[in-house]
Length: 387
Image (cartoon, rainbow, N blue to C red; front, top):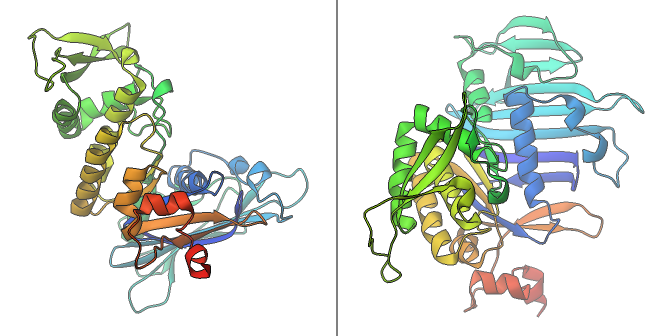
């Protein structure tokens, strides 16, 4: 579980430090950094977990504009394997016009009593790899412009480091955008894109490699979408398939089936709300039912109130059972009322532009819901203590 994250000199995060619990609803005004937090987690996953991007994704336009700093720093504190991992990444822009490079990247580990000890360290172009007994067994040169951690191969003596790499690789940050979700699958993809534009390709992978997820999704959608029966693929050329949805027509009263013949729609023909709901339940079954970190930005977009509440309850139940960590960013009143009193985090941007985060707080004697307090600005302790 991600216990703490620190970010320095990345967009609105000047010197940002946040402690986390298994469940959080993150809220705040537009531009307060909610999506940027998920952006950082996604970037670190791709850079250090998968080696997909170069240092060009750092510094430049992503640095804090009102500071003239040439270094970006990131820290993750992650609980696992009977202790806590500390991941550090420092990106340095050495001079004007020069490409940013990795100054240092390191993973350390401690149990409940010991101090942090090294598992991996890349500094000044040299990579040191330690075994589970914290003995330096490998020393190599490294590439300044990519993650050295991403290049480390799994070794039997590096069980702890392997666990951390797998955890980082499993971080999932998404913002469902049904308007660009494609119906064409040219190949299966193991993980969906951030906006789920490649949903058809991802579902193609689920249908072949994670049949339990695809079957659970089908049964769930039959309960929450009137008339829904199947998601299926039809060939559309060599190595290309089109995603379709089959429905049984239902009556307007009590959603009862009045015809036994399936009606087939291309995925593109479904409404934005239907596609968003399908994607949300797919995320629930694929990620909330196994350990890991799932971040969902504005899941309530396009989805009706009577649809978002059951999904939220199932998401929380699934995460409680599996041990998954769930971070949700939303302004939706239903999500606020359900989650803010227990696990709300308020993001606030100061006059200087820097972001801070504080737990949601309500007056002891209030009769207002969490959403009503937020709407009136009374979720800020200063607003009701001064009054």
